[in-house]
Image (cartoon, rainbow, N blue to C red; front, side, top):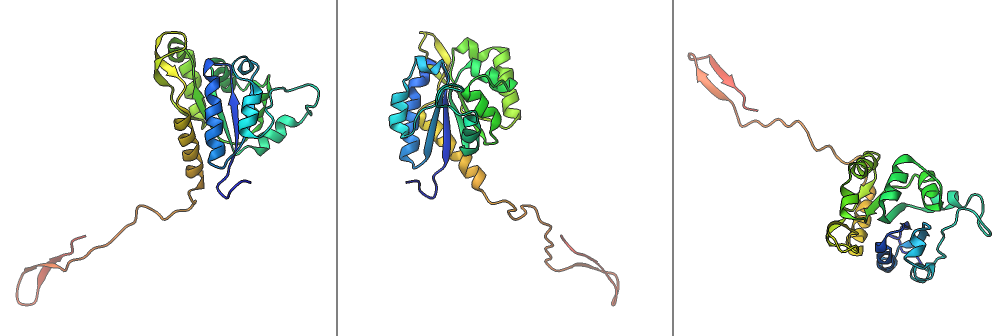
Length: 218
C-alpha cells in the first residue's frame, strides 16, 4: 500500500550493458514506498529480463507498443499515470530520439505523450558521450526542462577508462527525491527582497541659536 509520500514513477530502461543496474534502482524506489512501473526498449530486453523487474516492482513490465493484449491507448494511460519518468540507463540512441521527439516504440511514445518531468541518467562509451552531437542532444533536453544525473568516470564494460558509466542507483534515487522535493515547495513564498527604512536619530550641524542642518541616515 502506498504511503502519503509515495510517487508514481516510470523507469524506462534502454539497451545498455548498465541495464542490469535498473534492478537495484527499482528495488531502492520500492523500499522507499514509491509505485514503480518499468518500461523496456527492445534493446534493453537483450540485457535484462522482464521477470527480474516485475518481481522487484510488483508490476508487469511492458515493452510492446502493439500486439496481443496491448490496447491502442496503453501509452496514454501510462503517460497520465506517471508523476516522473526516469530514463536509466539512457543510451546515445535514446537521447537522440527524445531530443527529436520520435515515437517509434513504447518508451518514446509514452515520453512524448506525457507532461511529467524527466530525469535522464545516460550511460555509454566515453567517446560517444563526448561527441558533439550527443552533447547537443543533452543541451537541448536540458533547455526543455529535463534533469540529468551525470555519468560517472571509471572502467567501462568495453575495457576503456573514462566518463560514461551509469550513475549509481543510490545517486539516481537521490536525484529522484530531489525532483519531488523541488516540486513540492509551496508557491507564492514571501518576497526575499524588501525595502526597509532604518533611522538612528538625526545628525545636526548648528547654524545659529534656532537653525541647524540635519541628515537622516538610511
